[in-house]
Length: 494
Image 1 (cartoon, rainbow, N blue to C red):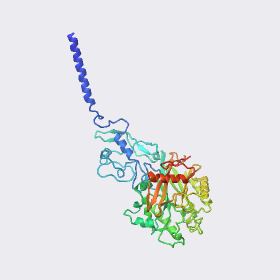
Image 2 (cartoon, rainbow, N blue to C red):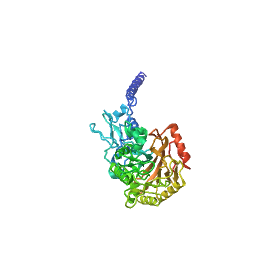
Image 3 (cartoon, rainbow, N blue to C red):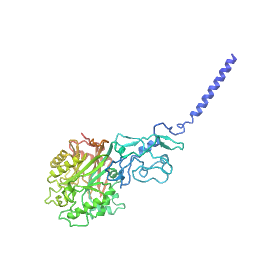
């Protein structure tokens, strides 16, 4: 009996000792010490939070941020390509995150190209990417902890080939704004020249970022670039010194509408100088040329194996006594006119044969009339029937409504963007396109948005928020018959 009790005591002591040792070991797990234990096949919590904060990819524009998207062949500016890298100059990184991601010393500046670590000998994460609900991309590359506490990717990494880059669907954002005026001695330019940072001080920082983040951004160049010529005998003539063209680069402009009623204000000489100035600056222009063939030719971008075409024309002076901005002919410079719109329709049809997505930009309508006319709507319907996938209007100097014709968006007027000293509602149009990996599949319009802005006291701000935002959006609903616009400016595509 005593032997049996002794044996029981020994066993009890033994098991208590085992439990004590197990408890000590469990108390020192990484979770207890405040670290997230690595889970095979997943990034650390810290790295994931950093990735989520890295969505505002805004490189300095000679190559602007593209919200993590990469261009295929045909991109006009290779600096636009972004590899989803983390740009430290745009994010206020917590110190622990900077150490975790390998950033030391001063914040790194640079464009949106992928960076490689050198001194540390590590590899930057390329990571597997997956589309988010909004169509963007985020990294979820597999990582594991190294002995030094850093992170590296599992498996060998190599730069994707051009063929692999193309073999992915892409999403791009096309932006459009209304009238810009950089004419000498005009109130906008006088104001700009007094600012410490020039044109950067004429737009809100948030709006500048929005403009520069578009993959392609277009606005109306409502003046001529020249030091030559004589002003035409009209009420307003606008001429900018050719050196002013650099401001378009600052704003992130890729292409301008040249088919308007001021591009020839100082005669044919000034028009030719304008074409030369834009060409030398690397700014594409559409709707004007040294002859009719050039004026009616589309501007085409190729992205991810898909071609996006821009075609433009003007009939802005059809309600005037004199057509000062004469259309181009076979042997004289001018605009593509649409006073007889058949030439414009034919230009759209030809563009549709060459490209996968066609944008028709037209300078039309009555100035300061907020409701689009039956003539504008009739022309829009013919443009859609001719092959236009979007119609963007300018000239009235104020906003006009938005309509959807057979699934094609029509913005009848985007108004003044930064044009004069009037206080006006304005805005930008945003088209989001899905470009399939298969170049034989047609690009698809997946998003449509009106971005509310304000021109006030020679300063344009946006995207507006709060009461100002709702006021502008409600105005757009009131003048857009049958078009649904939600509280964020998103437009329903039937």
